[in-house]
Length: 260
Ligand SMILES: NC(=O)c1ccc[n+]([C@@H]2O[C@H](COP(=O)([O-])OP(=O)(O)OC[C@H]3O[C@@H](n4cnc5c(N)ncnc54)[C@H](OP(=O)(O)O)[C@@H]3O)[C@@H](O)[C@H]2O)c1
Image 1: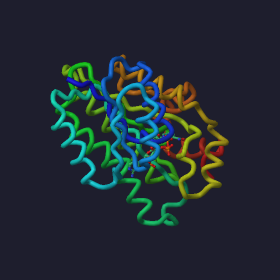
Image 2 (image 1 turned 90 degrees about the vertical axis):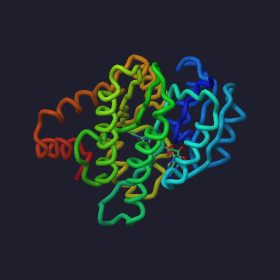
Image 3 (image 1 turned 120 degrees about the vertical axis):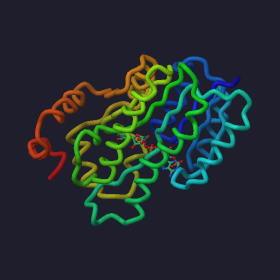
Image 4 (image 1 turned 60 degrees about the vertical axis):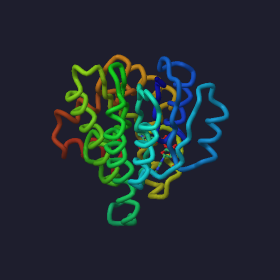
């Protein structure tokens, strides 16, 4: 009965930190970690470094066949129990919607929206009481974001999907937690796009530490929380986004410099 943690985006940034913490025992007893990403050498490094057996799935989550591979692997693993599913893979590009390539916009939608839905659907039959799903959203989900329009809308989808699923699964012992980090220094900022806009946003909001976000997320999930906003000031922003009209929020964002 192997207890499996599946982590997408395991090759870098927040996903890699989740793997490190799970390997160190922070998420309880896990027999295998299944790490998903496109960069084989980085996944192979995890296989070598981790004390827990890591199975590397090197594929593109933008391609539907990838989910068949995971589903088949689960079906072939006798007594497989997915105790932790972390949908973390993602990328985003800053800038005006009309100035982005159409592939960049639709790739973003595929990886940020379709991938967590597909993987959650395929893995759900293998989750057991006590299992948790952690879906990585973003503070960008709190309100529609000019210059980050597709990304922010996709992260809003992740937030709403997660919280609705959490309610659907009440009483099963399976929890779902949406995590909304603010900017973190990861490979996320290496993606092509409008560098000026990215710099403006990070100047205004600052960065938070990847390790802290991963720890807070695992703790929130273990406590059955459906929402984790690690940065305290972002919790205030989340509350404000519920009461202030959109135009007032836009004016506020112009004032702090996150949008022009
Ligand atoms: N960094 C931030 O400021 C920030 C803030 C809020 C939320 N987030 C969210 O946090 C999550 C993790 O991002 P990060 O900051 O850790 O960035 P990162 O260092 O760039 O990591 C992104 C991960 O996603 C994987 N990935 C991207 N596209 C993929 C694809 N098509 N198929 C398979 N794997 C793919 C990458 O692996 P390969 O390249 O090997 O495929 C990598 O492991 C994302 O969902 C992001 O939207 C980030």
